Image (cartoon, rainbow, N blue to C red; front, side):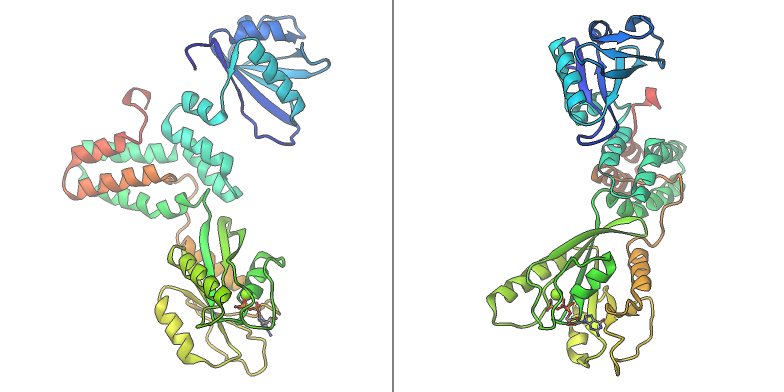
Length: 384
Ligand SMILES: Nc1nc2c(ncn2[C@@H]2O[C@H](COP(=O)(O)OP(=O)(O)OP(=O)(O)O)[C@@H](O)[C@H]2O)c(=O)[nH]1
Ligand SMILES: [Mg+2]
């Protein structure tokens, strides 16, 4: 809480439409301010409400605004009012007029979340893009990562370095999914012009995101669409066809495509099954040995009939054949081993770096340094 004011005010629910909103008032003078602004139906003073109990009543500055106030802590009150903007704005304004200091919710969290991991989990939850991502973050809010880190810390204290190293490595394997709970995985569709990249991205997201045309060189800019694959957030990028060209715009598109390809999590290389161009295909494949290869237009009469394997899929963006299997394969490539329910998952760069530093120290037989690295992530010993 800011030292120069008697209490802080923050809006805990996101802006925009909603049935309910929550405004928090916390600090030594919060109860007194609420007694001036809130008319409890039971006529009780907020100073006499037990922690954890609620009071129903009216907000005095807002004719007819019914609110429920919960005493969330000794000096902390949650005011549950109508959602939208007007009721929230009026309640915040009256609290500020009564001496409160309005603070942004992230700043509020920084001052009030019990520890760094839970604060980061709450922040990430506000930006979680899918239910599956939120479930993993809720596990971390409930202490999954903190418990695993504490267990490793205890192993180090007992000198069980091999067990600690293996547990740190296991946590490290979950970093990739953890870092993509808020920031989507980047999947880029690339290939020669006219093979059906834009048609495929449309088939993958289920609507007409990108322009499809029978002439090669249609897509110039990078066209993106955010979707969920197997419950994980994924940004698909459709790119300009890769070929030698004298058209400066198409050339610029090719450059943008290559930039995307350099920093993505998965390349999906699209080839045309109805056209034989094995030399070009091989050259592209050599450039992206890790890519998932897709032979599209398998519906065309006389198209190559190739084996459908984990590294090579047959699709038709027109008939939809193979699209489901392609989606499943992309999901498997991005998250080969999804974390079990309740597993600790590092989900910020700082957590992943701390775990990597601890592992490097253990590998140098330096248990003390490894423990110090973990302590930077854990709550202070007295709160554990
Ligand atoms: N028969 C058939 N035609 C397809 C399929 N996928 C795409 N096409 C057609 O192929 C042509 C090119 O499709 P696009 O999706 O624009 O291809 P692209 O790879 O994005 O092309 P550029 O943007 O020029 O690089 C269009 O006429 C599509 O209708 C498919 O699976 N089967
Ligand atoms: Mg295209």
